[in-house]
Image (cartoon, rainbow, N blue to C red; front, side):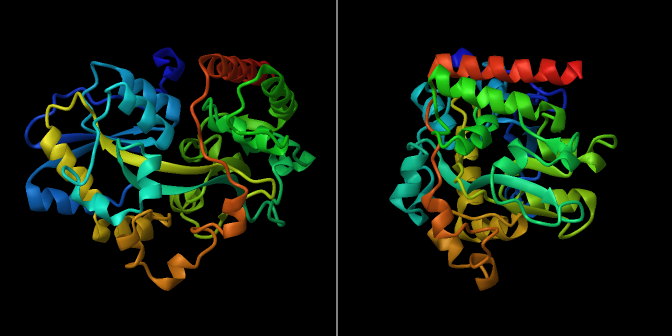
Length: 349
């Protein structure tokens, strides 16, 4: 299965190369995915610097994490990755003995990290859209998979082998974890027909910072919370908005954990505990406009945050959502071939 996680890493995603020392910890994380003040305060309190390495897809993250020469100490990974890499001994098991703040999480959340991480942030996948270009909020995956003619060349999709298939599979009424060739072929047909409308297959938070592509993206596949990051990147509050399609979606959870290869495991565990405590969990949730899984952190949030449906999805949305599961090697290979074919079709236009 190790090969099933390998992908070409974006040139903007570089593993840290300097050796980790007593005063430095290396954190592998999405861009703009932690309140920077938390790391500033950690440095002030401990004297230990945290150096961030950014990735812009799950495949890129997993390639860095799987590299025995990388010197990552702490990593934010999805729940499926936490279980897979935990079972392979790549990341450490955690419990209340080495991460005391785990006591603040319900058992159902802890189980989703498989005993190999602290629940970090969670949310859904959906459609991001520019409110000045799209007057009516999208309601169906068909709005992005079978788009209006006005969106030709204005859509940003995603080349991750798991998340890229959420939209077509949900639209088809299938499991987002489908492994069979017939279902994946049907998804490919939808994705192939969409190619003329796609401007880029790079993650929208990365693409929006591209001077040529960013202004031309009107709709994108993304995660709940991305709208706030996009608005911050373009400097226009409220411009980008987010909608979960009626067919249902992926309900995701990220876990924060420690690499088994870390030379500073005790310090890394303390950082995980520090980031996960109630105060910092609440700060993260407010700063990033994303939901926390910590019961103690949730209690510290303002009511307007806890009741915001763009942050905390409505029960009826979650009822139609699916969790990510481990895919077969054959499924991952087939999905990667499909993504490669889409890239070739796009390049040929």
